[in-house]
Length: 330
Ligand code: PBG
Image (cartoon, rainbow, N blue to C red; front, side, top):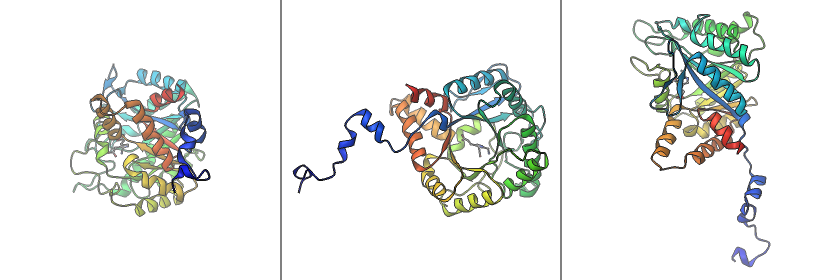
């Protein structure tokens, strides 16, 4: 029997007929408050530097970052996550915890300037600061050494806390990193400072453009001995469980679009906020296709962000944060 012949038959189109009806019945909402903007600040430059593989994204000076932060607050997004590029790199990444290191300086200035208006998240990793480009301390044999790295992360967490970060976000994927950081923060009197763990972070090709932006490409080897293997899903739940047991307050899945199933499973499993990181390569793909006229850029931005929210992420880190916030307000 055709649906039309039976007036009692459910008809999917009834609730789609006008924009207002579609808005009323939308199951997933996306709002500026869901969004966090990743920013890069570089030491020793006098003008912002464009990033070729991420059109529209720059490496900031301290001054241009300040302006961008005000625009972000104005647009109504919830926060920034900061990445720094120091002038000098060394094997231990000492600029990451130097009090006057580029990110710590930026945190201090932004906190002075904006107070608590935006959530200032500090990405905690060493790859932007080490001369070899790995996320931790490396043995003479070239292996990233887990436990000595934890001591470095503890020191960096304290420096970032002292500089004014509202959230510490470890992204290095070392075992035990959340516990080491929690202990350091508590020991330093920062018992109230939350840790957002990059819990399920995959060894992904989609970080390619970021490595240009943060100048942190590994000089040898790759990150597949510490970041997760893309075929694995159950392992993401183990990583999340472990990070929560170590004291993580919120968890992240990264990248986002190729890992929507992981976001959904993690969101189902935990009772803490779940963030997802729409990474540099996801940004670059849409930008490149849009520049060719192959996809509608604004729609692609909102559709991908909505998909990530629909999968279960409560917030999204995205290079389009400010722009998306403006699109949502139109
Ligand atoms: C640092 C870090 C990376 C990203 C965020 N934090 C790079 C990496 O792991 O190689 C990637 C973010 C992006 O691609 O936008 N470990």
